[in-house]
Amino acid sequence: MPEAVNQPHIERQEKEDRTIYNATKSEIFWKNFVAGMARGLGMMIIQIIGYTLLFGILATFVWPFIEPMVGNLGGLTRSLESSLGQFESIQNQLDGGSSRQQDIY
Image 1 (cartoon, rainbow, N blue to C red):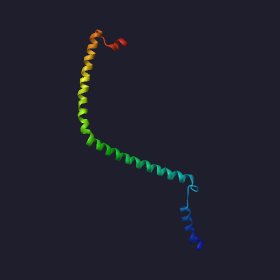
Image 2 (cartoon, rainbow, N blue to C red):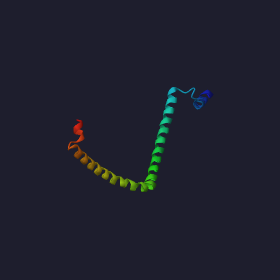
Image 3 (tube, helix red, strand yellow):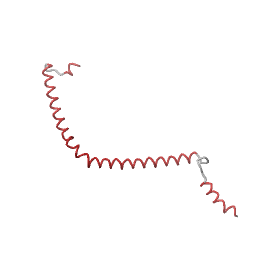
Image 4 (cartoon, helix red, strand yellow):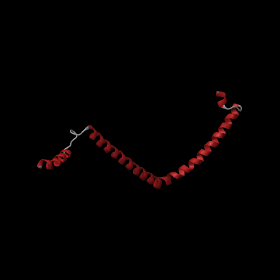
């Protein structure tokens, strides 16, 4: 009778004394797999929080300084497009009305 009482204590003792040397390959694999997934998920959550904070800081403090420059880019592109149109018309006049792409083909 005393042996049956001590049996659960011995099994519990064996489970607590389990090391990497007497664990099975599947136990090691699953423990490492779960640990890696938890680490990856945690890093992803931290990155999302970090990028959100960075975007908020940039939008609040940096964007007011950059916004006038971005507004000027629209005017610059329009002036470049008009200059390009003028350049093409001058080139067509110099070439005698034929475009350069037709000469290549």
